[in-house]
Amino acid sequence: ALAKANAQLRLDKARLEEARLLLRLERDFAASSLLASSLRDCLGHLVEMVLRIPDVDRSGVYLRNEKTGVFELSASRGLSEVFAMRWRSYRVEDLPGHANLRNGRNVVFTASDVLPEYREAMREEGLRCVLVVPVAVGSEIVAALHVGSGRVDSVPAAMQTALESLAIRLSGVLVHFQAQERLLASETLFRRVAESAFDAIGLIGEDGRFRF
Image (cartoon, rainbow, N blue to C red; front, side):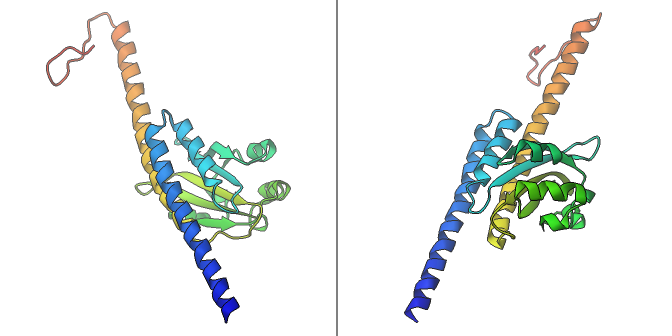
């Protein structure tokens, strides 16, 4: 009975430490996303932080190309160059459980679940399982957080929940930086038009002052 009680105590302690770690990850990513000067820096921080989770030794973020619909690798940690090149992009339908992914639900798979062109790459990389967490803006999946392990064959539910929280935070980050990019593109276009026009073009702010 004493041995059983001690085992339960160790289990409870491990779960508590895991919960604390996952809360720190959420807090740290929230802080780093506010300080990041670019989307690239922000994604780099995220994939680095994910590796602090026990049994996780690979991570990556794929962003969906708006024109082609293909998901393209934008940041990663722990992946070999060969594997990153083979998995540099994919279509949602290439993944097992893609219907779940399209509906905003996580997908977990092993090498035996994927298409032949990806299967050998996973085995050579020593990946036993991969968790894909969709990142949605509204009803549209715009990115995917990939977490891989060469040590275990599944991802605990508590860890998946924490990674979903990171995905929600990432969604807000993507909206922020994409809005910045659109604003910069609009300003650049306006400046080019204004500088190449024969007639004078100006911009007046809401306060009536001349801005450009």
